Amino acid sequence: MNVLPICVTCGVQYAGPREDCPICEDERQYVGWDGQRWTSLEELAAAGHRTLIEEEGPDVIGVGTTPSTGIGQRALLVRTPGGNVLWDMVTHLDDDTIERIRELGGVDAIAISHPHYYGTMIDWAHAFDAPVYIHARDREWVARPDDSVVFWEGDTHTISDGVTLINAGVHFDGGQVMHWRDAPGSGGALMSGDILQVVKDRRWVGFMYSYPNLIPERPRTVRRALSLLEPYAFDRVYGAWWKHVVVADGSEAVRRSAERYLTFALDDDTPA
Image 1 (cartoon, rainbow, N blue to C red):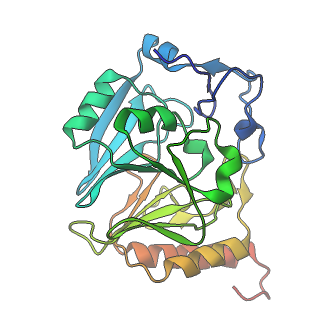
Image 2: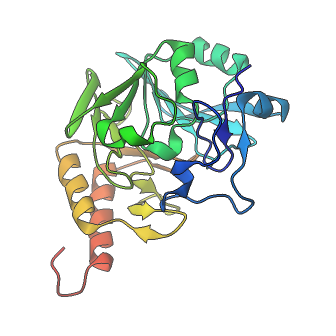
């Protein structure tokens, strides 16, 4: 059983013992109120954590953990004609999880929106012999370096036909979203994590530099993200949490959300 240290607060696994978690010490996260605490996959299994697998949309399967670990996000197994992509990541992984994912076709590639969701990505990569796509601007945050990590550069990167990573740059400089052109039953889908966070009113998304510490994202960054997304059509937007999904007119939801955000973020006499 894997005993590599995992930060209890963010759920990210490190390559070996250490006293600090740089991801949590950054202002976009926080050190737990009880101080820095560590666990491991072995301890999580002993504590009764198990994987929860449920449909989140057409050919999009949610993969979460109960009780939740770290920040509590769920991943998405996106079942495309070119292969299954695991979008984002959870911390818990055991033999039962691996078997259930294999029954769904396995994992051909992994892509993760930003460092708070790196979880046990290397264990998942090894279990399914899958590359992990991370934007090069977030290279410094990879807590367990491994040859399975593919660092890409630039604004976009194609994983397979119709599946594209886009460096929106919100939340983290390397923050990425994934566009699926041929998502069934819709005019495309966007997997956004919390780079563009689907909010409680699921007609809208939000943009934050730090969610727990309520630091708003820079307007120029939001403008850049909107410009990069403009060529891509999508009806659905899948956020980071269970059922946080924009189910229709997603492109318009992102556009009007950005306009609303910029209206509030800027002075009244400053053009959006």
